[in-house]
Length: 130
Ligand code: FES
Image (cartoon, rainbow, N blue to C red):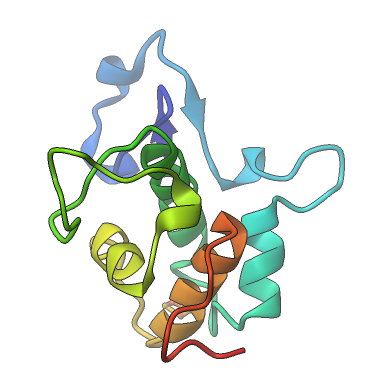
């Protein structure tokens, strides 16, 4: 889920700690019947198999894009002090690192990374599935 716009594991947050805070779940991504760009990209890029992990993957991906747009670096950002320009500057390594807390027992990781890159408007990196 997104707690005040930041990624959080819903199973680890006490309800009282969320009181008065904005909670967004996967159900909040689509607006007025239109899929969120991440949801569309997950479908187009085979970013799921059984779908069990998909709500968490989508929420985390939405958080990743927002974090990148704020310039937040990750462990693999080349210049941590400078951060990253925007979500469009993400590459496969950055997306894989930033999404690494979300496990997929089906192993749909290649499609998930492709989908996040597509939704970010990032250039498909080498090894992507065009
Ligand atoms: Fe099955 Fe991720 S799609 S666990």
